[in-house]
Length: 416
Image 1 (cartoon, rainbow, N blue to C red):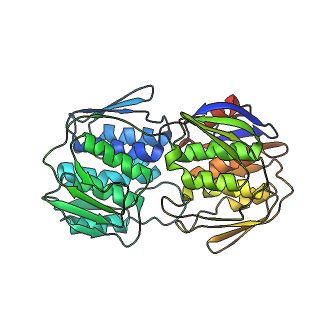
Image 2: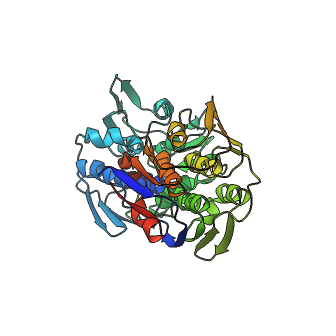
Image 3: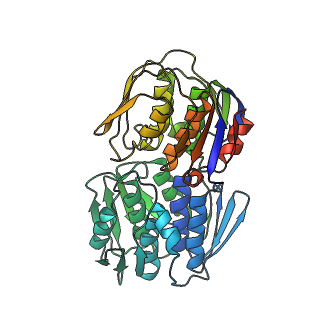
């Protein structure tokens, strides 16, 4: 049952509520380790990546409970134990525990974290910056150990923008001695959410949402509650589904202010979008595409997480186009699978050239990473015939129940 069967050719109609953000929930859950007591995280998505983070926290002696979308983390039972390697290796976000655990205990040993194979994504940047904060790091072939007697503030100039490194350094800096400055910091909404949560707990952080963060270390943080914002990539996924399959879909709680570049490209590609107080109404394609090029970039530019989804949108547009990927070097792994469904796509370096296609047909295709897997499901909605997308576990990392949500919108899909 690690596959999804989709019967193509049905327009979408109805409403779906956008879940809480995966990429905000994970660093916030890691941040609870900095707080002695109980924190309540509302609107936390019920996805496998959150489950693995829960296992990691529990392995460290924390008590974690879920009630609906509320996750309660009590760290008072914290102890220095070995974290389960299967959860560390399956999830890239486990690296964020490094900064938090160094701040709490001064020492951590762990295997190199895993996740989707969409590029090298080395953690050298994390480790180099932590060394500047007084951390001694010993690396081996399989993992590393980091140790410090006291984290110290420093001026950290990142050579390139990295969401993960920015989050890790924030977690290390909030309890460090003195002032930490992070230059070339990531500006993503998920960074802002992490900073908001920490400020609710008593952290002193300036510049969230800008390229320069200033963090004044404090002695302690206090238990707090926080509501995770809606997931902009999930909202973009269902937006893409409507553009490919046709129809009218209301995306309740879609975080419009976090989706400006995606919404701009969608309108240029033919979607009609109406803005409401509690979400957006999407109407398939109302006119021909006036956009033949998409270039990914760091926020607020077009997100790399949406690239494979818009590749499907462009392949079904009836026009030629191109996508330039500037963030990850291996994010075109979906191309052979889409070509198996009838797409005409060739890759040259970091550019995918999308030719005119007469449409997609059903096929058995393989998800190779999270967003590419979701994109294959979207492609299958618009295909003629039946498709099976295997490796559903990749999709489960970021979507609460994509099959149930699509069926509620009129799609014909089931677990296989």
